[in-house]
Image (cartoon, rainbow, N blue to C red; front, side, top):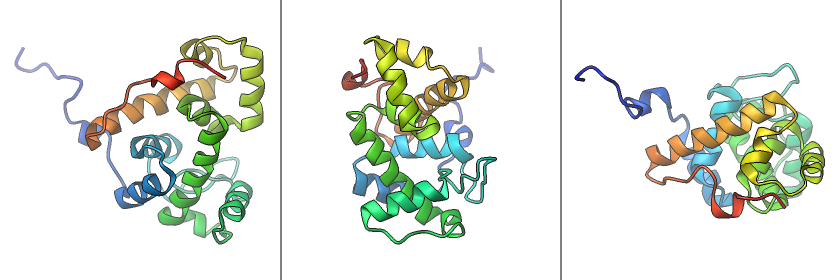
Length: 181
């Protein structure tokens, strides 16, 4: 089949990489895989630095101003204005610190951190408590909010693609992510 397209055709076009220097720096500072940071940004804003959600989340990684101020205070960064959060460099820096806090809270389990980034940590804590020790893949499929369930699956898939594009492939679920705490 000469005209049959493969899944890997034109990944660089279907999965653009915007602001690579900001993600690389944030990954270095926070030890979060670059592909995971990029996947969050792609899902949150499709790399639109001026994005504004109906909930007033702002910028590339869709930070709520209140969350950004709290994270900045805890990490010793300057408190950002709303306009600052539309600056990709500032947005990625603060959002990556927020994600690092979530990764720490959830034992470096990306699915849990992604769910908390989207729906809030208190909800994720409640969902974990009610899950009864199911495997992670089952937990993901039983997330009560369809938006968050799809969000987590998209972020994990995007992280795989970006990992491949960056030359740092990652599995869909890592060994430490096979179960919930």
